[in-house]
Length: 374
Image 1 (spheres, rainbow, N blue to C red):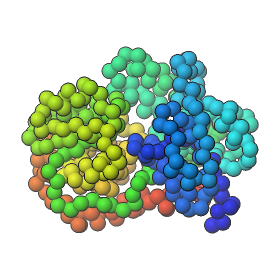
Image 2 (spheres, rainbow, N blue to C red):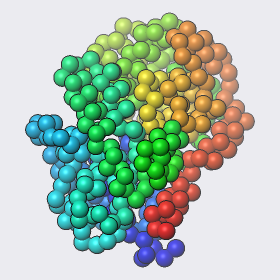
Image 3 (spheres, one colour):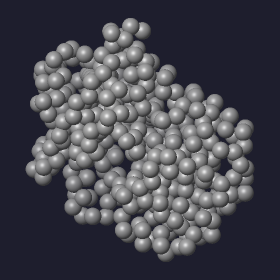
Image 4 (spheres, helix red, strand yellow):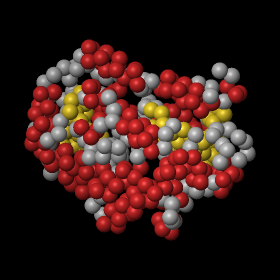
């Protein structure tokens, strides 16, 4: 490919480095794969706390814009996640050429509402069906005003979502989401999540603990951790580790109630990978069957056994690579069984073959390039 022919604007909802939570993992490694395939990526980042990242300078161009998180943005007709990222400075930068645009999430699609871009090729990477995601966030949120905000945001997102009719194409992250977007708007294509590795690097043998990991400041993950501790980990004497970003004090106190439950707060990237690799079982649960849980990909590439509930793998084909349980009793029984099993070379080979069919960064980047630049 003559890389001088391929320029692409990518608008991100956040600074995608460090790649330490689900959405930015997909963004960072997709941008990396596109760049390595010869695409000159013009990266536009909304910054609201993570700061500028020198590693992103490997892109052809990187620009940062302040996200307007002022209180009054919550009362716009547009969803807050969109209104707070509406930027005339960004629009002016995009109008300097006619290169295609890739919007990360519904969050960055304000460009689709501006008539100056009506003849421009604008694609959208859909990380979720956002109004479903926010409705489920509301159901998980214990704080009244946050619950109200998530419900209002879900309504606004559902009303705003038809803007996707104006997109040149939608890249969905799961088959379930692809079917949804095709039914409502057409031109949707399944592009599985991008991740840090493309080969299964799991350890053989056995670990001696069970791990749950996630961004613990997110209500969904905090609720999942609490459910596991109170209903599953409390019923066994196997060492259990809960690890992730910014755990609230209530979660610290809950872990302290059990001598065999350890909390690892804010582990670095290397430490988190070590925790995943050395665990005997990575346990993951959710009550939000939306999008793809990229931490599941991380565990499948780096960990041994993965024990999940059905919502964790819904809309994917990953259930064949996991042990699925639903009730606390089933989780306890499966943990006891799996703690006595070796993870073998055959297990690694089977998983690697299955992952290569869907989750190959290089191949999926080429599909994106063919679709965007056809």
